Length: 148
Image 1 (cartoon, one colour):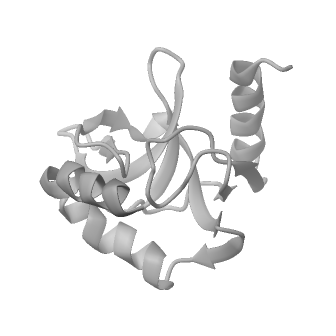
Image 2 (cartoon, rainbow, N blue to C red):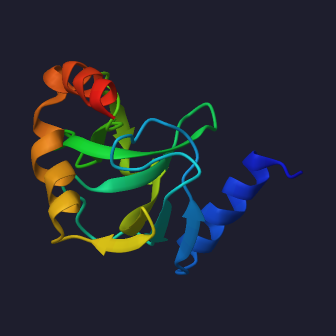
């Protein structure tokens, strides 16, 4: 047994120091793209620019660690970058999240045993199409689960 909060704090510190890490997916908020305890994600330090569709880690103000997809970004009047996030299996958008709360970006995933990156069909589908149909997701997921 281990303390997951301590583990996530250590993971964040490693990434912020410039290291890249891989970890197994925990949770169902990114279904159907990523499945709990089946898939792996590869996390790297944040690049200069974060874009709509990117999967990033952030820490909520209550200390909870989250990895979701960017669905919107903006700049405040005082030049602070802010982001809004949503899980692939969720209809609710969370934000604004300040850039300072972000600490890692997912650059590849091991999905069903195969590593995939930006440019693959499923990566691009979820990054470019799925992120734009948030209001329809629940109906699509119901149909998907019926046939799956």
